[in-house]
Each structure stands twice: as C-alpha cells, then as structure tokens.
Image 1 (tube, protein in one colour):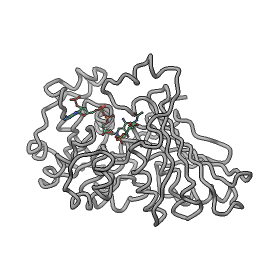
Image 2 (tube, rainbow, N blue to C red):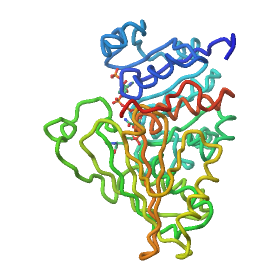
Image 3 (cartoon, protein in one colour):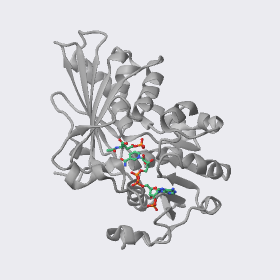
Image 4 (cartoon, protein in one colour):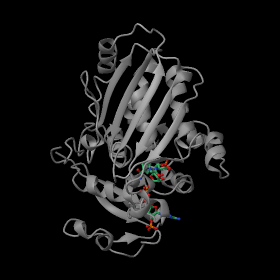
Amino acid sequence: MGNMGRVPVGIVGASGYGGVQLVRLLKEHPGVEIVYLGGESSAGKPFSDLYPHLSPFVDLKIEAIDLEEIAARCQVVFLSLPNGLAYQMAPTLLARGCKVLDLSADYRFFDVNTYTSWYGGDRQDQEIVSKTVYGLPELYRDRIAQAQLIGCPGCYPTASLLALAPLLKQGLILPETAIIDAKSGTSGGGRQAKVNMLLAEADSSLGAYGVARHRHTPEIEQICSDLAGSEVTVQFTPHLIPMVRGILATVYATMRDPGLQHKDLITIYNAFYRNAPWVKVLSSGTYPQTKWACGTNLCYIGLEVDSRTGRVIVLSAIDNLMKGQAGQAVQCLNLMMGWEETLGLPQLSFYP
Ligand SMILES: NC(=O)C1=CN([C@@H]2O[C@H](COP(=O)(O)OP(=O)(O)OC[C@H]3O[C@@H](n4cnc5c(N)ncnc54)[C@H](OP(=O)(O)O)[C@@H]3O)[C@@H](O)[C@H]2O)C=CC1
Ligand SMILES: CC(=O)N[C@@H](CCC(=O)OP(=O)(O)O)C(=O)O
C-alpha cells in the first residue's frame, strides 16, 4: 500500500462477536486505523478487559455512542449491533459524509416494508434504503464500490446465495424447487447469554429452529428473485450444531434439463466465480467442511448431480463470523475504498 495514509475507522458494537472479529481484521489491515470503539453496557471499559488476549495489541477504551463525535473522528463506520438500531444511527453518519457498513438486517432489504413485516419497527426511510447496496461482492461488486451505505448479508443468506447464484442466474433450475438445509455453530447467535447456547444445552445435540419462518428466508428470496428476474420462494431450514464457528448449507433443486452433467456444472460455477477470490469451487467428488473456512473469508462450494432424481445438490461452507459477517464487511470496505478485494483478509484456515 506504499505510504498511503490510513483511513480512520470506528466500530460500534465492538464488544460483540462481530465487533471483536472486526477489531482482529482491521488491526492487521494496512489501509485503516481503528480510532473508535463503541458499545452500550461495555462503554467505559478498556477493550482489553473484555478480550484480554488482545491487550498487547489494542489499547482503546469502549466509548459511549455519540454519533456526532463518531462522524467527526471516522471516515468509515461499522455498525455491529442488534437489529433495529442501525437505521436510527446511520442517517446522521451518512449526512456527515461517513461511509457506513451495517452488519445487522436493517439495510438488507430493497423494500423497507419487507423489513418491517419480518423485523417490526416503524420506518420511513425508503429513500436511504433505495440507495443502499446489498453487501454480497460476488453479486454486487460494482455497486458496492460506488456505495456510501452497505447492508451486509446475514450469515445463512451468504452461504445459501453463493451456492444458488450460478444456477438461478443461468436459469438452470426450477427456482420454486430450491430447498436449503443449513447448519450453524453457536457463535451465530452472538455473545449475549441465551439458554439454548449454554454448553449443557447445545453440546451433543443437533436440532432445527425457525422452521418455515426464519427471518433469513425473505432475505434469501429477495436476492434469488433478483438473480432469477422473477419472484422466487425457497424452503429454508436452519439447524444449530454443537460447534462454535461455521455454516454448512446443503441446497437441493430440480434441474430444468435433467441431462445436465456434473462436469458442465463445475465449468459453469468456475466461470461464474472466475473473478471471485473468496469463492473456491471444489473439483469433482470433494465436498466442503466448515473447518476449512474457519478463521478465513473463504466460501468453499462443492456440488453433485443426481441423475436418478434430476436434482442438483450444492454444498457451501463458510465461517459465519468471517464470510458470514465481519470478513465480508471488510471485503466490502476494500471495494468501497478501491483496494484489492483480498486486502487484510486471511485465506488459510488454522485447522489441520
Ligand atoms: N454472529 C453472527 O454469526 C452474525 C451476526 N450478524 C449480525 O451482526 C450484528 C452483530 O452480531 P453479533 O456480533 O453476533 O452480536 P453480539 O450480541 O455479539 O454483539 C452485539 C453488540 O451490540 C451492542 N449493543 C447491544 N445493545 C445495544 C444498544 N441498545 N445500543 C448500542 N449497542 C448495543 C453490544 O454492546 P454492549 O456489549 O456494550 O452492550 C455488542 O457490542 C447483529 O445484527 C447480527 O444479527 C450477521 C451475520 C452473522
Ligand atoms: C445460530 C444462530 O442463532 N444464528 C442466527 C443467525 C445470525 C445472523 O446472521 O442474524 P441476523 O440476520 O440477525 O444478522 C439466527 O438464526 O438468528
């Protein structure tokens, strides 16, 4: 990056899982300097009180959230907060000229009414929503580069959409047959205490939740519809699995042409993702494992054709806190700043 001046960035919600991942990534990113960390119940505490292993590297306090102060100090602001807060904060930051990346669901929907019907709230900000770009670089790279506000995707939608995108874009499947069966580690639920996330509850157990009504369904459908050019509904079932990080999405769909061969699909996927450094399409007979993506911003995709049933099966593995959240936000930042899409992001998992 030569002698480029570092861009001052702030993280609101720094104490959470998304926040600490952003701190980890941005601390080692050559283009930025973290100048502000914000929180609610953690305000006033040194960041290292919450994450002592980072004490040799991060000497910042978590501060109360003062939007004018944040805008005065930061050129870029990451909002990593529970749903329903970002849309109350972003307008002030945008008006002061900041670039904003929201990790919550607040800015993921093209139509504000879709958001309110699934998430509640009373919103009158369609004008801002219309200028927001959905932060999935593999699909909206050029628009992200021009945007001031990014609605970063949910973790399940990231894994699901990267699996489905080439099929929908090229009209290779009957969209209404798409079924997404996905499993997530417990960090997907965030850092706040929840009974179902206790080790005694989650360990040695696998179960579905949000069946037929999970809030990621409309998000997945919105982008599938955009890709297919017509209204698409999908069946999405998430599961909680006893591990900390990772999502595996297994996607099933009926092929329009039952004669389509596995090798044709591999060629199609490789072509679709040829300029996507964070998607790796696996060669024949190899299926992704979540641990391969752990700690990295990668999405691994494997696929198979079942000529008996006429279905294609696509498997996609990501780290929910990386490609599913903080890593993807940094990938978007790189595009917004005109930097290499890979800058400051880890590629290799620490697992064997
Ligand atoms: N975990 C995941 O895998 C993914 C999460 N997301 C989304 O990213 C966002 C952050 O998630 P995650 O990091 O897991 O969440 P966490 O629960 O781990 O962290 C939430 C953060 O929000 C802050 N916060 C909570 N309430 C308020 C409030 N009223 N005002 C200001 N700040 C508040 C907390 O601060 P404090 O501790 O100081 O109170 C904390 O820093 C969420 O919208 C989530 O849905 C998106 C993709 C994946
Ligand atoms: C395991 C687990 O609980 N996962 C979360 C998904 C996290 C996420 O991406 O949620 P947002 O859309 O709110 O950002 C869930 O199912 O709600």
